[in-house]
Each structure stands twice: as structure tokens, then as C-alpha cells.
View 1 (cartoon, rainbow, N blue to C red):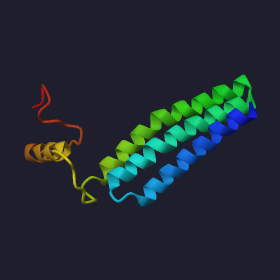
View 2: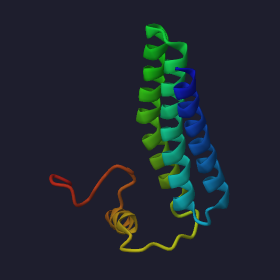
View 3: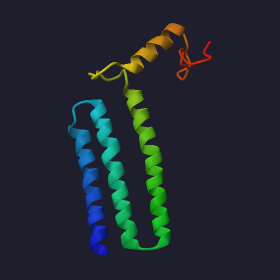
View 4: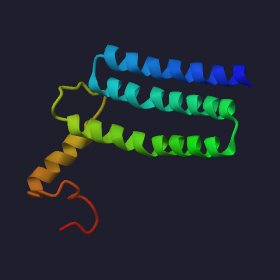
Length: 125
């Protein structure tokens, strides 16, 4: 079991390292955010599986499952908040239409100060 656990943990650590290298090497913000979100999440899952195999107790497996679930719940939210907070602060070239710019322009025209108010939503004043 030690060899299988080691393979999982080394693979997970390698993916996490690749994500860190991507954060440093990628040129634009959105690529960096993608690298910071995807590879470390999968890397943590693989390390947790390897640790659960190596430890071999039910309590450790439950704790590691909770760690992975917490990571899967918080990583997308944190990535979205980081990308949204940096929007407008960094010059980005986009491939298609900028939906967020259109939303913010419509919100500015309506004079709404509520960041969650969508002027095009049904029932909006």
C-alpha cells in the first residue's frame, strides 16, 4: 500500500507545484487565476487520497474527505472573488464580448449603488 500511496502523493504534489509555476509564468491575470484554482485543487485531492491510503484508519479518511470537500467548496468562490476584485484594475484582452462591462454600464446608467442589483432582472424597478 505504501507504493500506491506514494504515487498518489507525489502526483498531487507535482500538480500543485505545476499550478504554482503557472501562477508565476503565465502572462495575464485570468490564466494565473486558472492555474491557481485548478491544479492545486486536484493536487490536494490526490495527496489526501494518498494520505488516507497510507494512514489506513477510518477517522483519518473522514478527516481527509472533509478537507477535500472544504477545498472544493471554497476554491471556486475564492477564485471568483479574486477575479471579480481585479476586474477593472488590470488591463485584459478578452476573446469575446465583455458581459461584465455591459452589466456594470447598465447599472451605472440606472444609478444603482447596489452591486447585486440587476436592472434587467424581472421585477426590477
